[in-house]
Length: 283
Image: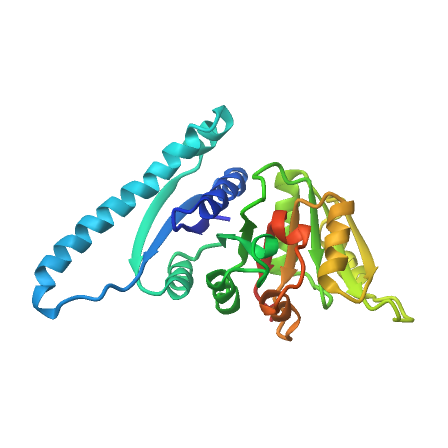
């Protein structure tokens, strides 16, 4: 991993995502690129020169605000100060529509991950992701780490990968292998099946076999979880197993899209506190 892209709107939710990005970047020796997207202004065509001067001044101030965030995080304790010193950081300011500019810059910079803050369903009942995060997840070919505002940027020791179809050796399993090794974490592949299914799913066992054939050194397990409701079943599993990071692959069928967009009728602990890493569909 070389680059993590972190969109920031200066809210505490986005700053919390930056903390996660720093934690993630350090073991890889990766660079964190900060991005602020300002909306397209309504301008007077007769005042273009003045507008350009104002835009240049505003951009300079936005860059300074982004750098000030690093100073703020460095002041939060000795560990954070060391992280800020250790991780290279630069900043970009763009004008346009947030989701489009985030996805565009991620491609331009060949970002390995996009790390975004999200209020999730832990606040007012609504979609799992905010609209911008959902739009980025749906359009980018880069993995997106969605960090709920209540999540704590602590050590990652337990990773769960929820899958709908078997994973073969490739980018996702390789990324999970590296992630688990660097954080000295264990890994569980889980698949939610209907309680009335007679035949147990071979999805997780097939994936586990492919993973172990690639690298038997990481502690990894596989489990089929019985339940009618995917969110509720995963939430219970994450709570019982102290999961620090939930991973999913955005399938070409609607499973993850339903998880992202459908209206929530209750608050779920998983959505309020556990980061979700979403990989793009596998070819």
